[in-house]
Length: 213
Figure 1 (cartoon, rainbow, N blue to C red):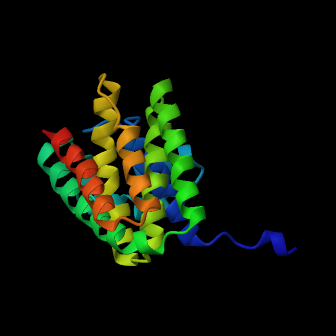
Figure 2: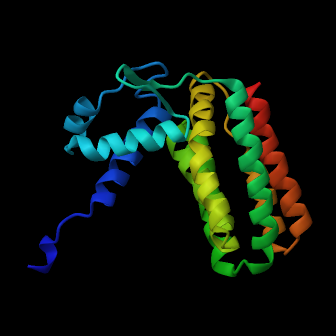
């Protein structure tokens, strides 16, 4: 019965983390809301242990705050925190773009074009969640090709803080980032123009810093 192997504990922890993180980013669990491990464990169909581990990680990443023996709750949206996160994430995207552009292959460029097509379609349909997923997929091509694991981990850690504000702004009638900026980035990548690709990347992430203002 090879298929009935025990599910690794780390997988349960990661499942709990991803589910709770996504609910916070999507606004399903609002800023200031108190979260309880027993309640979320029941909703997720998990034991309390992986949910507690997920809480610890989310506190470390700034999406939850905790007072021992008192409460764990979703952090408020603080513009300064988002600006700081956007500055760090943007700088790392510039770094991975500089490394990745000379290494990109045709399949990588095609993946970026497909992601931008999904992004544009989602923006047109007003589907913010799909737009942000496609945006992540586009930029993740450069992160992956760069091979910089430290940058990848830091981007993954701080991007949810930014996404939470983006989603809130767009839900209030704001506009998603331009597919045209993505197109400029893709064309620079396809041409092997590292300097232009880095310049466009900086423009994209500078816009996110301004969003926090």
